Image (tube, rainbow, N blue to C red):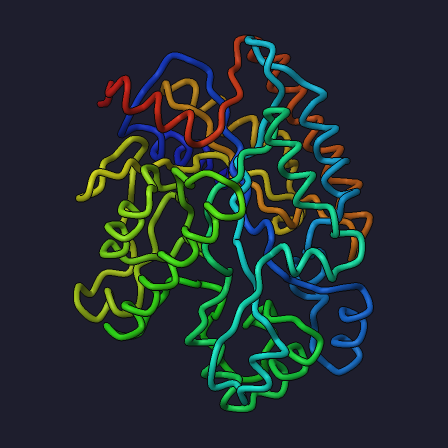
Length: 381
């Protein structure tokens, strides 16, 4: 009872400030597309047999590159519902554009970083050879909206530093073309190397600026258009990087309820987090979009995920906010654990059906469309 009350009060508090609209807008934002996590079931079993408890991490247990069949099944669910304007549900698919080139990094004795395009990663991964074509077909159908999530979902400086230190768990994963081992699984304390934009000092911050510019360039080369929005891996970025993003064409910053500052920012300001609200403007004119709903069945077991997400959607609409749903790729992947995608795709279809039934005037938009509407109608409170 008390936890339910806290959840309701939290839903209200997050939705009080910021841009408002009486339109029932639903935006689904999904992260991590294109990034390597667990390469295969065989690698999962091998790491587990070597004493790395990968089964304790929902991402290591379920997340992988999307296969063509994963995309087809997800698209089938998105196409099964339509909004008041006859448009199917769509996902803002936040993509990285590269992964580590493990062979070249090993040849450089872990002293240099090299990367490969996601097209190369897909091309050499079984059942992923035509995934990029599926993405572009989904975009043409209006159900798949690729946006920029980073050059890679990896903090290059942190990762190389740990590799150079010879950490056995990391080297075992590296040997099997994997970088996404959860830091909670290491025997010794390890700082996350998944927060790609975190920095210890000014030098690392400058390097990250170069990586962002390079990533935005690669995104445009791959997709044929600039990414107008961005979501930082692990919600961690420095306000100083927003100028770099703006110069690269980004206009809207997706995010959670709080921005996690980098270690470098913390040494200067003493602050670790900054709260944002819907439609807020950054110092350089970017618009913040805030996720106020969650649909994460894989990483949040034990909940009635459809009921919880619907409660958050109602809270958003009651306070005249769009419902921006946070849901990661891991929920829809089946290569490592087929039950994972089977269950969660059914839950997603139930959620979308519930939205349509309760709010027949709903509008399915992507993040950029929402940002444009916000800037055209600056009604805030």
